[in-house]
Image 1 (tube, rainbow, N blue to C red):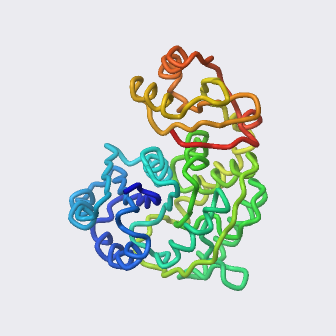
Image 2: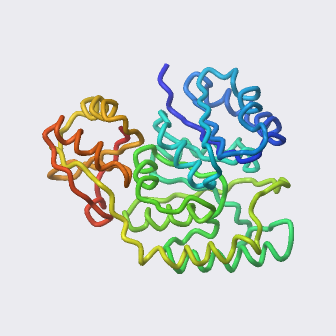
Length: 310
């Protein structure tokens, strides 16, 4: 049976929280249908036995994938790696502890049939109530800065649960530069620049202890990164192909050049196969195989197209 939904779980030193998170997810998997749902656990260079525990907790499911990064690169890098190997039409990225109640996942999947991005929103009466006054105030200030620098109107950009259509998710992952906690805001900035629809849904949140975010340690760097979005040149290698190019032919050429996580951006006149920033060599091979032209493209060239994962 074809996988329709991929659940991506970034995990860094999460050995003590994975089992409890799965218990929160278990009843929802039955509703989503385990035969049509894959779970992808990405171990982000943990120093504990996260990967071993993940196999014990999730290994019995019919569709699971375990990916391990050799060093810690950040939550954003782990989510993007999960997106690059996901097979489902819809992707839900969620925290290992399932602090956003998984009962919202079917609602997210339903909304993804209408919108490319469906982020969860923990906002209640205009604000997110964290476990401390300092964190609540810091969250309000940070959200104002995010809205100023990205153009988004969302009042909760850092929610750990976000839904994506796979094609747009691949494009955002390929374009993005940032691998740590600011990746959420960068994805929303890129979505705004590309003209992608964003349809948030309200979610119920349990503030489970153990978060790796530290207000004092992380906030300054996140604000510096946030201010750099508008100055960043978002350009990737692309292969320009005929508009009607067959995706199966692209998949075959991509396998032969050993590159993954690609997306085809189809426009009125052509199709652009978007590659990772280090994928120009593979792109040359794909261009030769399919009669395409290797070049680069930025947001302006990629806007207002349809996006299909390869």
